[in-house]
Length: 78
Image (tube, rainbow, N blue to C red; front, side, top):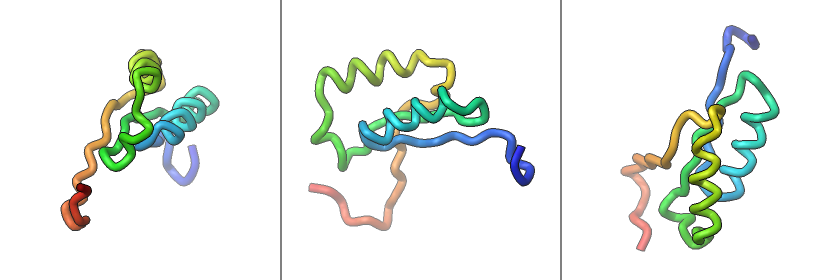
């Protein structure tokens, strides 16, 4: 426990960050992961990435799926 914090959820919002999130969750017992692809980063999305996301979602260290992105103040992506 660090300053009263016993657990944390690290969020990945693109493929590279999701991979790092899964690695961190497996490396540290106080870290859990959330994985998903932000709509701005779907250019990297492929069948292989989707398969990796599906497989990794079964890891008990991954506790959330998706990228909610409620950033109403940003300009909309085309």
